[in-house]
Length: 437
Image 1: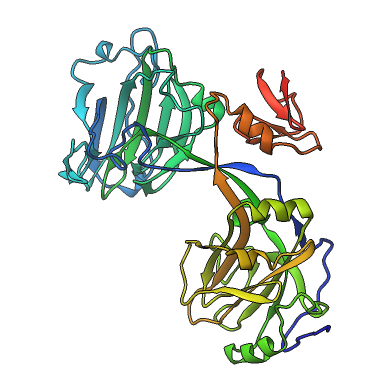
Image 2: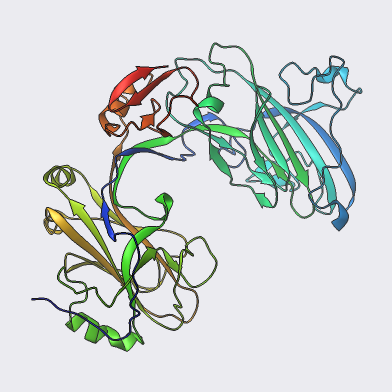
């Protein structure tokens, strides 16, 4: 039976397909504050660290000096700068550098620990930190490493052994962290010799905070059948209703069914939002109209076999009142909204049995609300990354990096393009095989 539901629609044609194919599996990284390599004040407050610090405090806040660096430590006699591992602080003016204990904050106490108060809230200033550490190769993670880089305010910089690895240009974020690239991770010496984390943070006004630390990443293997915004805009067919009361007519017509005629639907891309936020790919006047969204995806027998042996997860960020259907069967709904977070539902065995070889449809509806509105959703399988004791990650990466289009991956499964010319010497994976440049 071929059904077509029309209440309010805008016909449009686009030059792309709304059907998605499953992506190759990729290694995904997540921050885990429990996997401490080098403690930070923000995430491991019960392990305060020591650092050499150089502080400059100027006058009370002046808008002319907003985000303007007011002072920098002098170079040493050999011309080494403050962030260089060869820098000799004792050769700078006597008393300029001193050993202090974290947290480095304008608060008297920060997360229960007494602070080294390098600035007061109303005073503009700078802090420069040199923190040394050693790591042993046998204890150093082979996978991803996060740099904890909390700051209040900016501009701010973080260096590893003299090389700039991260900057913040404006604002504050005490909880900021970034995943180091393979090249940045390789800056860390694992032979027991000394490493240096050098940090600079500028203070405008209000709270002041400076921090650093290293954490081992949680790693998983993820394969998206319907990607979310994380992987870019996604194709779909969508439709605006006039009022929330129109849902009953739409559901009676089974708008979410596999056989729905989409000729009167708009063929476009998601996510959707009513204002200029992270989800604003296609405008949705959520304060005026509800929305219906249909996403097609193709599965073959191998895909279904993988899904049946895995946990298939539906992920959705919404505002508001979403309902989700898989091949015409309702399997999830939620009340209210969840801001920028994602609700996740692991599909049961009977829900996975709804999937078929060939075309599948995941459909989601959202109601009109009085305030903001957005939606982003996807479908994926994810399993823990297992190195099997390998120090390189080759075993696991080869298993999942098997495209035949000359894509190149590093030994952690990260996609690097299709040309070796721009890559440094090393071992890579192409078409499921290790290659040496």
